[in-house]
Length: 124
Image (cartoon, rainbow, N blue to C red; front, side):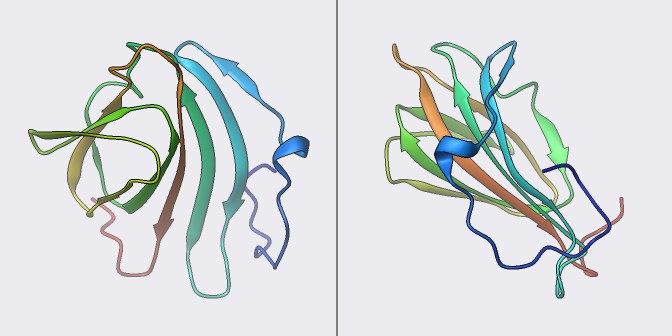
């Protein structure tokens, strides 16, 4: 579902119906992206990183972010600190963290990302 100005409402998002999009480092599935009754914006997507791949270069995030590892191994780096975690692990990146994820394993790693913007989310 593309980003919209329409407020998101209650819904079920079936894995089998999500459209996988091949990207240079793996596969991405957009779950939802838009405003809600209480958030300026919420985005949820599921990424599968191929072995040895990164989510992208380290970058500063203004929003807060929650990541749940479904399978494989993820090395999470934030503000120069790195830790490697496996399935079931939850990662929280605070506002203004410089972050990057990497799959150090030999098999694909899949994780769900939820990030959100509130009226208190910094604009810069």
